[in-house]
Structures are given as structure tokens and as C-alpha cells.
Length: 110
Image (cartoon, rainbow, N blue to C red; front, side, top):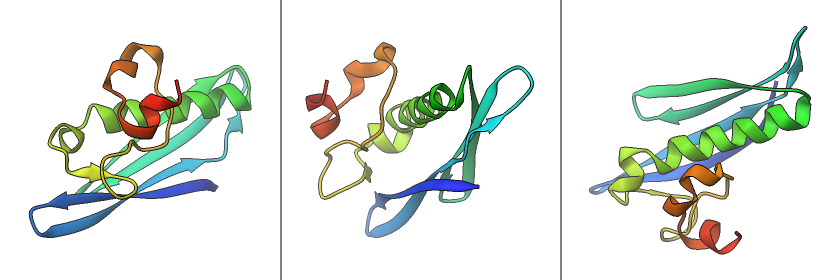
């Protein structure tokens, strides 16, 4: 079940694309909780599942996985991806290992 969605903006030349980012409801498993996520790039979908000891940890890890994917993307490196006007970050957490890549509002909230 989808619990959250954000539409990022990808601008390539004069063409604009919406990039939906989706997070799904954490689900209890026998050994761990899982939380699915998706990033809908034009022409492809990047998806994954984060595992945690409880629903909250699985959700946080899914958000961090999304953040890592966004900040490591070619679209980010090229300056083509944004959430709000300009490059002010994407509003999702990342692990401390890649915090040096944060920019805009994301960098200021640390």
C-alpha cells in the first residue's frame, strides 16, 4: 500500500519530466519488517526494499535508500533534478556516509 509520494522535477534541455518517488507501507515478516520504495525515472523504475527490526526502522532505511539513489544519480550530478524551484535538495534523509553530497535545505538541516 502506497503511503507517501513526492514528484521531483527532471529538466533535460527544454523537456520537463515528473519523477515520482514512492514509499510503501512497512510490512511485518517473520524475521524483519520490510518497506518498499520506487523512483520512477523516465523510461525506467528503480525500486528496492529496506529491512528493519521494526516498522519505523524499515521506513527510515527506505527513505535513506531513496536519498542515496537521488544524490548518486546522473540527473543530480548534471543539475537536472529538483524538488522545488532551484536546487534546494530533495527533502529525504541520507546516511552519514553521503551527507557531504547534500545541498540546499537538505544540507542546512544537519
